[in-house]
Image (tube, rainbow, N blue to C red; front, side, top):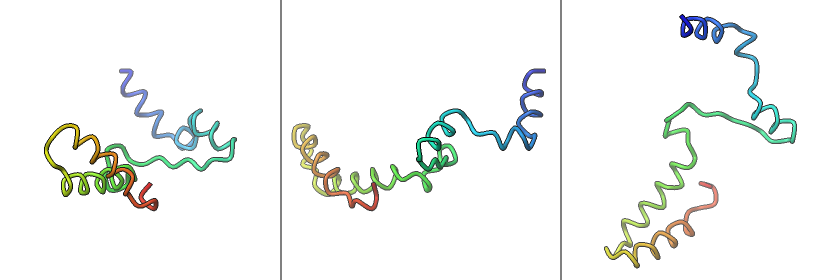
Length: 84
């Protein structure tokens, strides 16, 4: 019964228009808050960042753990700032 009530409440226009406390606090401080769909890799900037870092790591990996640690550090440093 509780689940039905939550679904009905969440479909109401005034409920949908209400921002959560985190969003209200950040916007009051002057930040722009954008929420992306959950688990949507094409809309998540971190996926582009890590994708670029992984491509670099695969191309330059020497298959030993100490060199992998060094290569990952290099990979993160070489990612274009427009992807961050």
